[in-house]
Length: 595
Image (cartoon, rainbow, N blue to C red; front, side):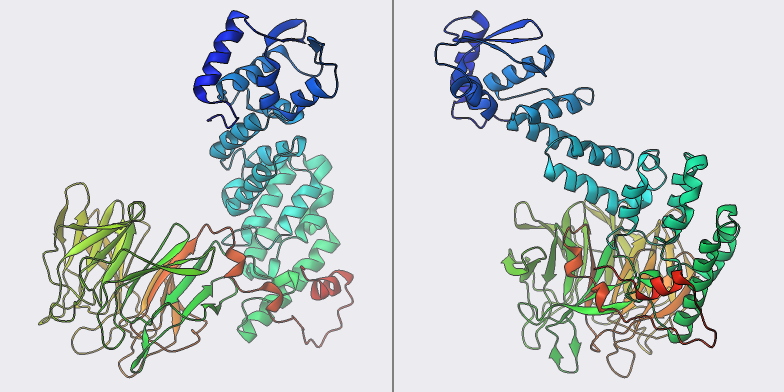
């Protein structure tokens, strides 16, 4: 870490040489009977503590200072840092060094230690680092460790550190809406893991902890197989009341096609990612609208009132907390422009334009760069491709594809860019190829089973999924998946709604398709393919019908709550039942909300 004091590196070097030779020193600091000959001004510049020690807590004539509550070893670190502006932080010394630097107000070392611990954060240590920050003033590190724990809870849930949490801390964590899990099942399993560490003393907390599980967001199968077979639950009347009530709520939600309520029993936690549907057209006019989809609440909301300029058949990518909108068509002009929406500041900015105008283009992200491939420039279909580097704000042309392709779709998988289908100006294509950045070459792969223009393509779990499109005769509902290991395509179950020129992305193991053209008109229908069950299911409709839209997924945002559905805006759970339920717990679950 660089030294931010008033002395330059050269001056610091000179003073350190004087210190090492014992020349011109004006103070002796004694720690654990070890004497350190120093220059007051250097330590004064390093820490307010030494400034107060030399100026307010002693007389100007005093030369010898005895410091308690500090080891000589750590004092040596302080002095070396004061003179050189650097300190060697390791896993072995970081905790002692941070506590000591905090106590003696050596803020430079505190910052260095915090930076070191932030870089070391992982599922196995984030809880320990968070708890450690309670012993010193490191608010940024404390927040980063806590948010890391919340965001990576699925990995944290099985660690040894989770078992070290106090009951109160554990309950406080489980209460949070921003505890990120794909399924509520994870919370229940984490509770059993915590209890297993000390079952004799923790088993009695099962009712308190089970109340933190949003059981109505699990399933009857999960409850029957995992909850009602647990002896702690079976031996607790309050737990059985919770299970009975949760089952009633699940039945109610199924019957009414509801995904969640604001009440705690069925209150969706925040998703790890938000799906964005961008641009497109409904009829003749390009769409200004960007909509955001919350997969846990199963609802759409407006991300911004309008794009910086209307675009249909454009491309979009999420990178570095920004949405990039590329190319497209406004009804009159084909664009090569690129606009960037900063999700933290909610502002638009135009960045470097592409080398080519591109409408009906294909876009993906690989290794921190945005690839724009093919499309139509207003005159001809393109086989050219280029990538954008945010660091340099420059586009670089790469090797051209083997085929002219507009209305194709591309994705990244295992350091390659795959592009499938499209239209070359004469034929609707079933061919596919991939680009390797290492060799700057395109390679043809086995063709798809169908010709697909206006196709949706996405990579996930070692496969490339190709969905829908137009084969020259009809809009397609069919889907297939490519295995790069075997170079073969396999047929998947078809969508419920045939569509072309739609948005497609993967969100939490769900392949989601949104909007598009169904052969008669633009649609607002949304459905998803569950990659674990192999089944298609309907999802909440978009706010407007549109085709020619594009989708991308934003993740890792610290302010994701700004783009997710407000949980208190979800409907209130009111059960209508022929039986009278007098359970105190169910009344609490009905009426309780999180502020």
